[in-house]
Amino acid sequence: MLKIDTHAHWFPPEWVEAVAKDGGKNGAEVATDANGKITKFSAPGINRAGFGSQYVEIPIRLKIMDEGRVDMHALSLTSPMVYWATPEFGLRLSRIFNDACAAAHLKQPNRFVGMATVPMQAPELAVQEIERAAKLPGIRGVYMATHVNGKNLDEKEFFPVYAKCEALGLPIFLHPVAPAGRERTRKYHLGNFLGNPLESGIAAASLIFGGVLDAFPKLDVMLPHAGGVFPWLIGRMDHGTTVRKECAHMTKPPSTYLRRFHYDTITHSDGILMDLIRHVGADRVVMGSDCPADMSYTKPVDVVERLKDLTGNERDAIVGGNAARLLKLQG
Image (tube, rainbow, N blue to C red; front, side, top):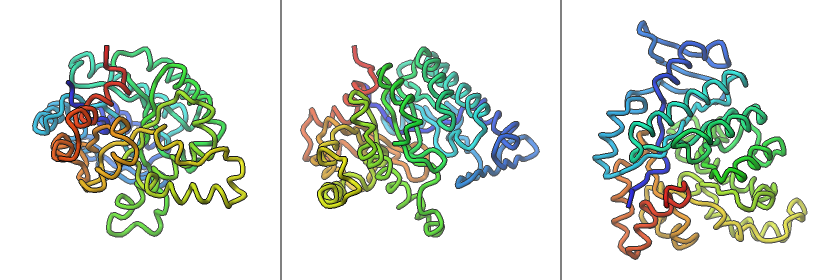
């Protein structure tokens, strides 16, 4: 059985080169050194101190995977993604990334699949790119931020994107970018520690309260960082739905949607991870590492295997079986 990491980030060299060359003309501030290597990237709400080799070079990635006993990475962009760019440049960057994922898959089909990036700032272009990318070898899902330039995911303009993903059987994997509360979380890396988990909660709640999951009943959505705050505040949302007029449109409690989502294993707490598994079911949890960030698990398989309260079948499902089903790698 393949051990599959569903939360693993990659910047293809050609993608980084395109950002270095044309990012400054298309919505970002990009600083490069004498060799053209990006030393600083910034866009509204987004800052990166370059793109390290561990994010870019496949040989380094394979070494990390082997050391962590991971068979396959589902490759995805992380911050800055592409929403900061003009629609046309965002589409170009999306195509570069998606084509690179397909090429990586063709070279090593048992090690890599791709999570397509699309320019959500222009939903009509996003739909076009989903249609194109879905035909590429190795593309197994769509990667999307928890908001699109400040717009929550229940905005009606995004519904055609969800409809296309549902029709093509492509799961959506979410990830924070420019998290909420930035003004108060600049110190101590709190934008990551607290902001990222909050982003997952806002996204999940928006999809529920905004009717997205009802409108697209066959759409699969994966929440990063073990769902962030969402699973743990579900009782509060259930109660609020019964007493707040803002939620009068809800026909069932938010908790009935818990199992509409998948959740990765990134908690950095064995106890909380076990609580999550018992809360949502082992069949809804997939292995993730956040590779190769400093906040990642370096040995994500070990994280699951050391949970002694799991049955063998539950452990196998989380390490790879659930992801194989979600990404349609079985059969």
